[in-house]
Length: 111
Image (tube, rainbow, N blue to C red):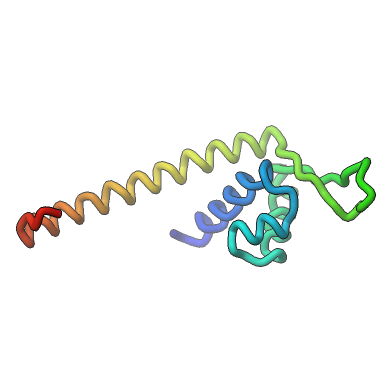
C-alpha cells in the first residue's frame, strides 16, 4: 500500500470511529496509534472539510470537543470504504489464486 493510500486508510479509520468514540484518547487506544497522530489526522480531516470541530456547550469541561461529519465527510467516508473494500477483495482473490496454484504444485493435501 503506497503512502497516499495508507494515509487515506488511516483517515477512513478515524472517520469510522468518530461516530462511536468521543475522545482522541479512545480513538488512539482503539487504533493502537498515538494521541498526537489522531490529533494530526483529525486536524487534517477538518482542514479538508470532512469534519467540523466544536466544543460541548453544556459541558463543564470546555476542553472536550465533538466532531461532526460534514456532507463532504460522509461522501468521502463512503467512497473510501468502497475503495478499500475493492482493494481487500482483490487481495483476497489473489491469495485464493496463490493457494490454488500451491495446491496444484504440491498436490492436494486435503487443505
